[in-house]
Length: 253
Image 1 (cartoon, one colour):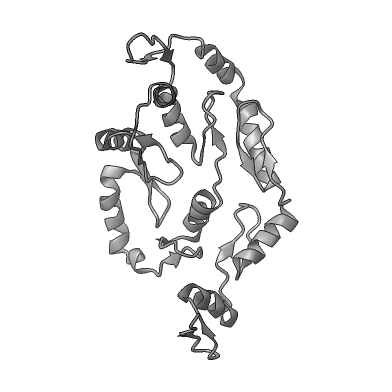
Image 2: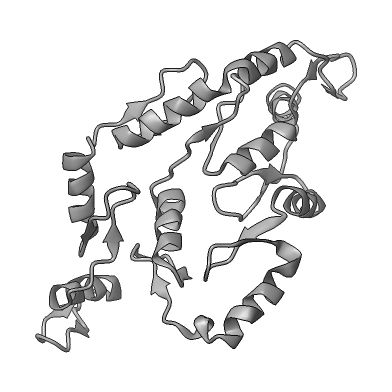
């Protein structure tokens, strides 16, 4: 393979732009790979050094939640302990939800002579796909940490209006209504804050950039490390979500 990408610092040639970008870190003191554990703050030049740090300092084995019906896994023991506390906090509310599983099932199969009904739309979809051969074209919600799927664009639009009414400002972290976020950004524009240099995600082929390092860390945890600390309370579902409000909206759907 021809090595046509030359380093301006030392003259070394590499075969791909991604390899050249990784090599340039040798000539820089910049440390883009941040430890996702909130209380740590360690930073590294290379991704493999970050992974080694997580394995050595935060117990890199894969840990699974022991609660029946929960499929949450993580390589960081601290996150498993935090996730377990979520189950413990549910208490009476969880018992109330468990009783709710016995309530009337509203989503009935429309196939003649079937007669089966389900409490959740996802259960009905699975039944129709496996038992009656229904074919669905999935449209995936693009909001970070959501990944809800829909059959029609109008369903996705309705989901976005109801489940993602609020977004976070990248400059100050304030939560705003989606319809008013442009007006909010205008206040930062007057102060010149939007002209600050954006921080690019260090993962190869990821084009996203952020104004605050804290937002970048959240992005890495959700999009690249696949952190999903909020499991659906329905034991038959098995899904986990990156954000509490996304999980709550999923359970209401």
